[in-house]
Image (cartoon, rainbow, N blue to C red; front, side):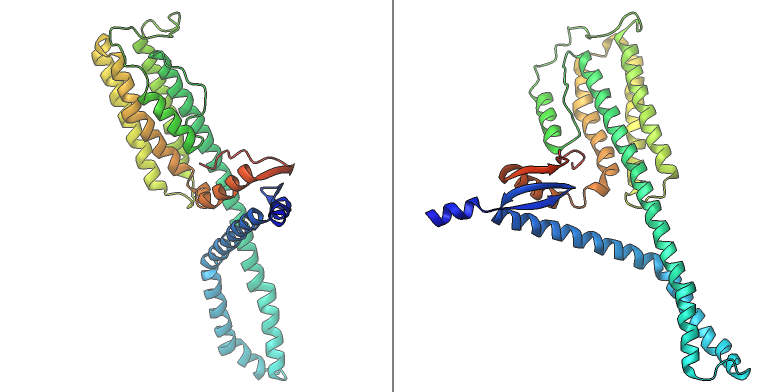
Length: 309
């Protein structure tokens, strides 16, 4: 028993996300294993990108070497530029170093820089749309007297919690009028609903614009654009329904539109936009759970789990 007590007290320090944690030896080895897996996979993905980009450069390099061997080098021998085969190899070395490898390095450095900039732009679009969507849904919920202040789409847990709230909310009484409207700005609740729907359509169209000019291949642009376009059509149809029904459009109709359409379809858009940050999600969450339950934050910026959905 004493030996077991000593083993549980033996802690090590692990580095994760620019922060240091203190954790017992066994769990620390488990964390290190996952971190090593993530590190190697990221390097393998980098090497794969380099290989794909470098195909054309390699092809041009091979063609250039063949042309040199068949034409330039024999001509050099004929005019006595080369005294031996070693002189040929020396010239080829200079060609490879000054032309081929420099072009290869510049190509990959520039492309990786563009990739990082593209990911940052995608991340900004994703987070902006996510928070706009949450604000939109929360404002609509107020119309049926439901108030929610927490995140909806930030984590899987927050989404499930919000979904349960909607499912377990009290039955909507259609005899009750819509709540929480500034009647100084909007004469009827239907005008306010239409305003909120159109504002969200503007957010969706911004995402479509972003998708139309981005060349980021980290996400499926066509699939994401289809979900966005479909959601725009669905909201536009709901606006037409509100305009046609007017006072016959009941609070229960709004509740059903939120639960059966808005919640899931917005999630599909968000899920597509955040795809690059999901590749290593399972491993990262295993690390986080170990550090959260068995570790102690020691130094650096504490990882809050944000954006790892």
